[in-house]
Length: 121
Image (tube, rainbow, N blue to C red; front, top):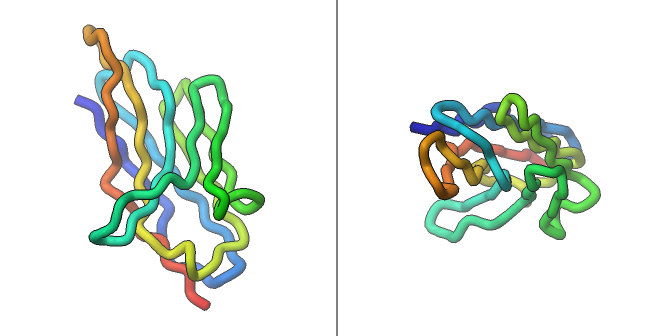
């Protein structure tokens, strides 16, 4: 089994920073792309940022210049540093990861349980 556990969400004032972290654990042989998504209940999840296993990153237009995604391959963790937060950033944030488990031939996509980010004006 593989689990992704997020941490670091909470309430922050507009303009402030927040750092989200996600740790993958379990029977992990290797991980490929990892990322952060956001979702308003009842709507489709939207990509915020992603990072490959070699460190190439991709950011949503709304995140460029404010958010930074990073990862630690040895620890199977991915982080999202969010600066200059706006009320529009309020959402539930989910991490995901493409992971190859031991004794499996293919990658599988796993999701965390989500963490609430609320930005007050």
